Length: 61
Image (cartoon, rainbow, N blue to C red; front, side, top):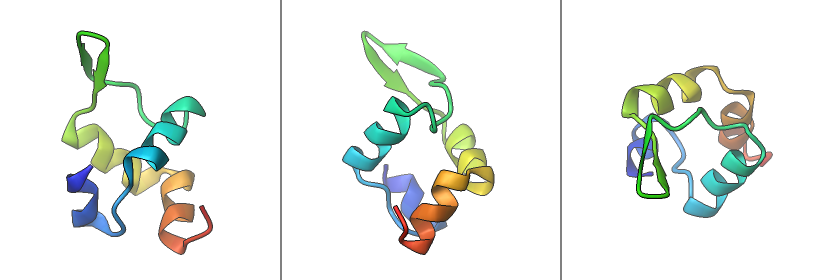
């Protein structure tokens, strides 16, 4: 999640996992085995538009 630091507050693995579990994260671009992978572009777009990300930046999540 290091690329998220470029756009503001960094997302921890635990926070990202919670977004995924609540279907608040974008769909994975693909999988390596059973591990989901996201593209930088999708995460960047999500950060631009996501209510969850905006709440994260405000510190309310």
